[in-house]
Image (cartoon, rainbow, N blue to C red; front, side, top):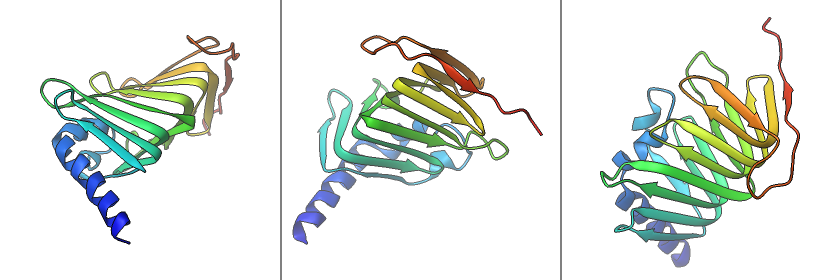
Length: 174
């Protein structure tokens, strides 16, 4: 029981050292997401405040508002101003979901690697990439989603992966 408390304390301390203000840019959609509490759980945390990195490993689950990110390993990188610049999740099938706006359907993505570029509000899904936007589905070796512009780019090839043909299922609007 005491061991669980220690791990929880370490995770909470890591989240506090990274700081809510520095993670807030990761919440990229609903208005309340940026002010929602950030919850991260993992088996281990390595925090390097000078380098601006936090690495969570072991069944990582990160949630803030409508955003959820999971993976075997999640690395958060901050810029010189302390703001999140990039979040990278890896694992057998790392996962991200977000509600882009109140009227838009939930966007869900999977890949062996997921990279979120905070300043550009862009998500890369790499290797066995799959993106669901409502009922539309995009698959390939690489799928990129630009959140603000609602632009999707899919490719059959990505560095370090086998060729995976691009497949799309587009559902007509009713």
